[in-house]
Length: 209
Length: 80
Image 1 (cartoon, each protein chain N blue to C red):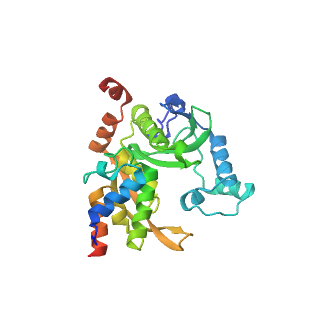
Image 2: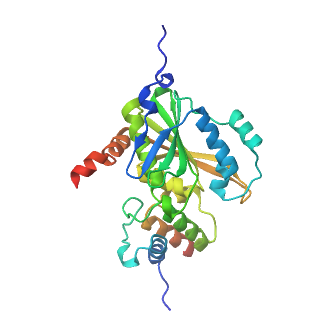
Image 3: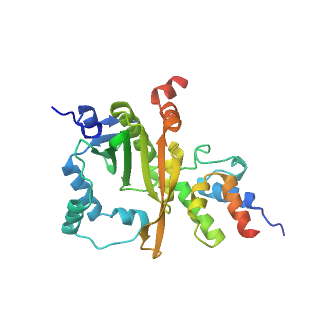
C-alpha cells in the first residue's frame, strides 16, 4: 500500500490535550471548527477583532463562509486547538496549525478576548503548540503571515524568535482607514527554532530555578 | 525651555505603555528584554508613536520598532 505523505498522516499524538501553566489546549474536530466560525460570527469576526469594526453577519453567512473559505480542522493536516483558561474554564481563543509538505507548518491564532485577564496567554498557547508539533510531528519550519497593522501579533512573532522573511505588499484591505495594507511573512527555522526549543523548555526553566 | 530628544521621548512612551518607571527603562530596553513590554503594551506604544509623528508607520518601521533605540530613531527622523 502506498504510504501517505508526512503531512497527510494521522497520528494519535496530534489529538492530545496539552496542559500549560494557565491553559488547557483542547484539539477540535471539524465540528469544533464550525463552532469557532459560528462563535466568531455571533460575537466578532476575525476582521473585526483586528480592526475593531462592526460588520453585519448572520449564522447563514457564517456557515457559508465556513464552507467556502475556512480551513476546517481534519485531525490530519489541519489541527485546531481551543484555548481554555484553566482557572475559570472559559474559552478564550483558538489556535490552528496547518501541516504542509517539506515539514513546513503555517499558523493562525484568534483570541476571542483581548483584555488584562488574558495577558500573555497567546504567547503561552503558541509556545506550547509549537513545541508539541516540533516534538510529535518533526516540524522544521513554521511560517506566519500577519497584517502589518496587527501590532500585537507582530510583537508576538518577534518575542517567540521568528524572523522576518519578507513583506507581501498590498495583501489586505483595511476597511477602517480605506487603505490597502501590507503583510509580514515571519518564519522560524534552523538555529532560531533550536534556540526557541531551548529557551522555551519548561523543564529546563524549572531546573534552572 | 528644554527640548527632549528622541531617546527621552521614546523612553517616556515605553514607560507610559508598560507602567514601568522611566528610570527603569534603559536605552537597551526591547521586546523580550523588558518583561512588561508585552503585546498589549506594544500596541499602545505603536499607536502613541504614530500619534506623535502624525502619520502611519511604514512596514519597515513597524518591524524595526522593537527597541527603545529604534523608536528614538523614528522620532529623531521626524524632528530633524
